[in-house]
Length: 87
Image (cartoon, rainbow, N blue to C red; front, side, top):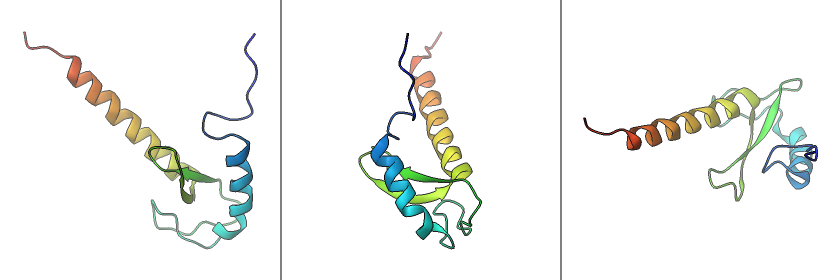
């Protein structure tokens, strides 16, 4: 049986602790994706760099997840385009 995880890959204990520390300072600042203020009560994420070696800062959860989905979908399209053959 697989061991249950408390977080997704890259969002372990250190990530969760840092997010909790930075969260109060995020309120009133602008999300670097949508440029709208982050307010108490909103779901916020601590955004990784693309190579996941550091952080870009706090963002709205929806903005961060949309950015990740866009990158994943672009990679899938690129991979699919590489597999197609000329008939």
